Image (cartoon, rainbow, N blue to C red):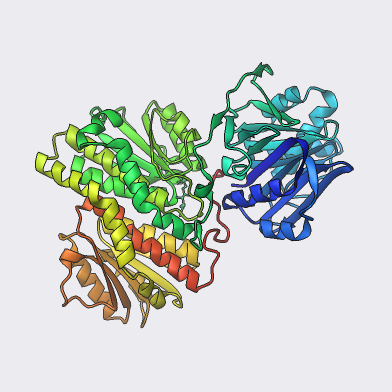
Length: 603
Ligand code: F6R
């Protein structure tokens, strides 16, 4: 939620550093944005409602400054508007903020009684006043920011400028990401390194509750006791091509096409020769008799797949839970339970809170995350990284498939530890794991998913149906479609539709059906007949070896025949492509759908 970027330099730098930085961070929020740039004759503050392109229209690109901070917002407190956009200013302090100040209302009243007048509806303006108020009683800025840390409850990453130190930026974070960058002539801060990657790839971590002082292109870091500490810089693993579209019209399409490579990399990370490698590359699971998969949105859908596979192959008691529900459910967890947290960003507030709850109860935790060093990764007992690389499209694709890959490998490990996977089954799995990336690549180049889109683009709503694993995949297919194309869609367990929702099926209603399980094929086919009898337009995706010409559908796509473990990874790809084509035909903002943000650090 919200992106922050800032710099200080020895010589004045172009305002483009901030604008380009904000553009790289727009995936974190894009309802309003603003900059504060220190120029020779004072501080220039500009804010707009809407995307960074709006800011570009009003800012002269030739202006320069010695330091500056900027922000792109995903609204939490107060509607998207210029007044609520950051930077916020309160007397001697100007700042940008990512996160939520939970006690802002009570602080506001206290500050109002001291004479502060608030103009916005934001919690950020209150934080700004808290820091300004402290600066009246104390002079040392490091001390002021540590003291502010005791007053402000919630999560935050701040970049702060004080009027009496006009060429300096201070930064502090708690439960919100902030990374520092350093080049020969300048120092940077940002919510993630992509914001300053075109300037430098040399980065430095800022840990929780530390304060950084950026001045004249240098960085100083102070620990919780206000003592100056040494922090080494290291090279970011991000490359410029990771943050460029490379000829694709959207990051979504680029990232879908990266899936074969990402799947290969993820599998190779855990398994170089045979499944026996999992013995070393994954934690020992033998003491666990129950798995609970926890996540939000697509990550939860990946967890559902992990849950189905674990039940089938490892015969272990398991469930998949929405993090936002789980954490308030007073869950019954025994010592032999492993709670598995799935998250691309590793920063999702509900998932993080659910993990902390489990830790408080003494339950072992395992994180499946994509972002190195993220909060979930740091706090979990075990961490398994997905190898998706930077995902910029707000709607997840390659990160989701790599989550499913890791969970599938985890299940295989548990199944082998329990002696539930015969040598023959292991050989089949190993061969399929090796050929999976290639199969997906071939599928993408030879299958015309676009023809599904023409049946959906003008529909009022659409339904996705499937049974078993196909139901979990349908949930993800439906989420992809609605978030990028703004078309209302629902996923149903195929047998469930007739218990009410079938009332919505009329002539032409698109029903996208998935059949990959031989055991459930006939059952789902019967459900297809039921909706066809009511006029539905059936778009069928079926495993090629299960297809016969007598199966009737308006369009059919054949999927490669794989074991269900691999099928769970491969079958989502046509759904992702379909969502892309529908969104494109409907003229939607594909990479940055309305109202969304990539990393949901609020509850
Ligand atoms: C949908 C999507 C979201 C995320 C969810 C969890 O395309 O990306 O549903 O899966 O917000 O985010 P992470 O995985 O970062 O915890």
